[in-house]
Image (cartoon, rainbow, N blue to C red):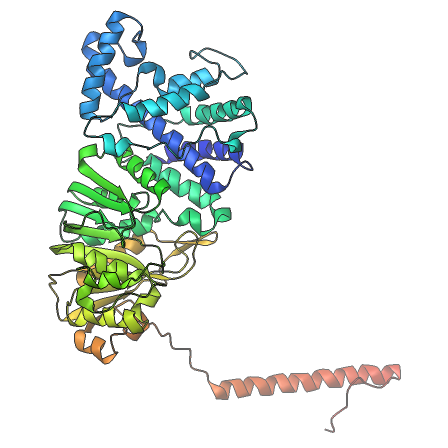
Length: 533
């Protein structure tokens, strides 16, 4: 996406947010906006596909007369082709632009009109038709209930049907002005929309609005790590995939990813993840996103993955039920992560699903590096018995939306090239501050990746610690134990300070004498005692 396109996108999103502001919470109008963006994308994609199919007939998709026998024949043939290729279908009259024009009372590019035609019924029918067009096809599971969070009957859109209709029409008109530029394979419209909407409007929504989105720089770092040794992946997996941004970033960094797998507990973000896959041209047969609680009900138990990335919810609660002690994901460790902190449970789950020659990178709070009890036991087992921890990377504080805590990235491999040591990188002081948020720039990411590949000691930045060193520290992985970032203070010359104090003292005595002289001339007592010379 070019800077100009990004600026226009943000301008329209701002216009829409101002239209919705006060009617609903930031995370709620975010879901409406993203749902309509997805509908627009599906429309433009089907139109582009159909126009290519119709090119030899010298007719465009929008020109088809749906009521004529010839038009019906065209529609039938195009639907069959589209379902096979894209997995869904829309008629010309159901396209986003057609509905936006109708809603704004402009049925052609030259039309004018201030009133809004009623389109809520059309929209409800169209969004349902998109899902129903896939019934009985291979793509049905990936489209079912995709638009369930786009509630066009909600009272938050207005008190009357007329108010709701006018509001939705305004949203569509704003979005209709955005060119998605589908020919640009590097365009990331939905990703940019996520980033902008959360960055600008999520402050009032607190942690909730940031739960499903990993900032793009962090996604890029994880993706570069897991693809550093293998650019051709058979599979990539995220057990807490949120909106799918991490998975898509791995796809972008790799030369090839055969299939994308993910699991997400939240229904809304699960829908967004499926939208995101489709929006990024991931064919419906090439992704498998499931909705369930990953720790309690894993959906890909029999699979092992070349690359695993994750940004699990920090220190989330989980059942820690003793029934899990008979689960192969946890039983080998002898202990479960505490019910109040599921961080290590996610690590155990991911290691279970990691292929023998795979690579895994996970973002976690710093507590996992040093907390004791069951977590300390699991940490020791990972290092001493499994020897699968490859690197510990400390990130700056305040780089995630909704929380300012510092985080770390743990890198795991089952077959390590350096089995006798663990690399520590302290990147916590390398960032740019933008407003109230700390930002990882590309140069900061590249510095981390270079240090990870070099695997060497760099003063105040990285250190290769032997397993013996780790054991001597009782398997405590707190980064300052291994990377010395201490800055010695400048030595103080006490003789020079004493000389300066003597000069100041002499100047003070001279000033006091001068003031005493003035007081004597005025016939008043000085405001201080005069020292005898």
